[in-house]
Image 1 (cartoon, rainbow, N blue to C red):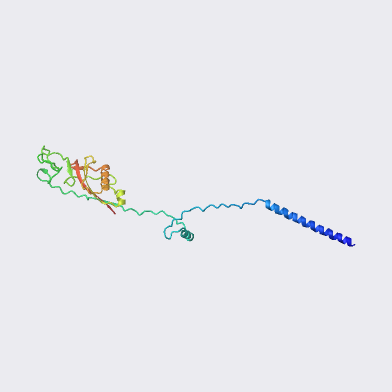
Image 2 (tube, one colour):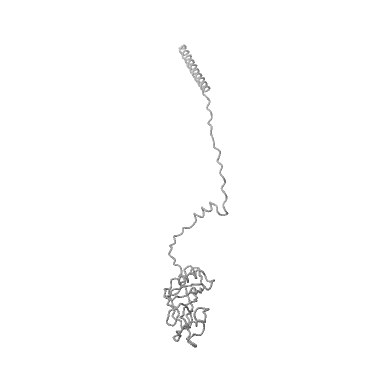
Length: 245
């Protein structure tokens, strides 16, 4: 009985010894494996340097982006306004006044029917008897027919315009710029009513108004002047006054 107990104790001791050896072998093997395992290199992290940015230029005082953004956020919405056509004020109508036509004075004849004062072209010679106006004129060679007369001479009818309009109109450019003034023009009305020998008397007249008068005379015809029942040429000095009403 005691022998069996001894055998059991011896078997247990052997079992413990074998288990200890096995654990020791495993521990040694683990240490060997750990020594043989290559060392892992630590990971390398590459960091790019920060890019250089130019600092923003300072704007004018009170004009920062943040302030502008705040203003835009709080800006009230405006309603669209209906646009209506606005008519410009009416332009004043030009008032063109011409020299009032003077009534011809009563004809007074002297001896041999010759009128008082100079008649005909200036500087006419008196050696040939001069021009004759009136029904009692002699037909002798000492007198000749009238060639040209001046406006206002006794017994001479005044030529009247037959064109439309009967006077020059205010140019649009002069109306806009408010140009006014007078143009004194000399011209000759021929026997057929046409106009010739147009000359400007006042050189200080506005050019735009002078051009308007010249254009009107170039397109206008007149009633011929009549003296002694015959059509004659007549010299005219006439002012044309341009003004805004």
